[in-house]
Image (cartoon, rainbow, N blue to C red; front, top):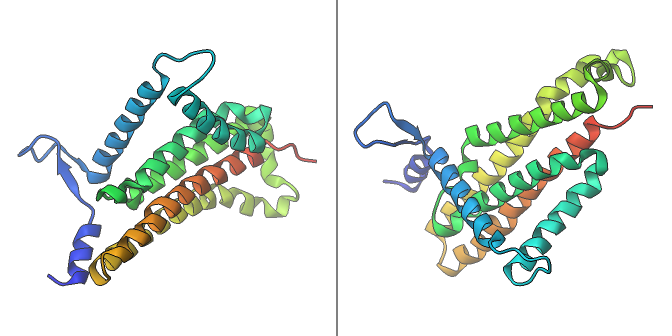
Amino acid sequence: MSMGEELSEKLAYKMVDIIPGAATFKVPQSCITTWGVMLALVLLAIFFTRKMEIVPKGRQALLECFMGMLYKVFYGILGEKGKRFIPYLLTVILYLGVSNMLGLIGIQPPTKDMNVAAGLALTSIVMVIYAGISYRGFGAWVKHFKYPNAIITPLNVLEIGIKPLSLCMRLYGNILGAYIIMELIIRSLPAVVPLLASAYFDIFDGLLQAFVFSFLTSMYINEAMEDED
């Protein structure tokens, strides 16, 4: 099998048997991986939050420092009016951060699947729409599409579809591109080079894409709650 054929086979959309031999119980491989990431995050949360103390120390201090840093980033964007959306943003950035680094242990990231990226993007835009309606009220939210001039109303409405598309394609394209490049490097170059490349694509780029996705979502939420002159 040629390199191209092997890579195409790896990139193919795969279904996995939940019950061996039962054709009606198949789910996407990306779904199985997502369940694994969710389980890992839950177990880590239980581990880090066991026997919490008023004065943090050890793993509790580490957790509070890390989560506090992320919380401050999103609070700086959303402020008091949007802080209720921060738990969602923290969940997304943790899920994406872990998922995007799975290549380090030889597991294909679920975000390499267009359906996963699209699902995350649509969920984020639903949160954006909800933020706008809950803050402005439904009538004012509809009227804001005419701002600053009624002539650009179609463009403002079009943004509802453009934003999730841009979130989806940015996440999917970057993770898929990084995965393809890593596969080509592994098959074409000496052993040391893939290790250095993995440090960039699986760690730096993976964490960067997790942050960019969450950051843009927070910006969209903040924009939806802005008061218009």
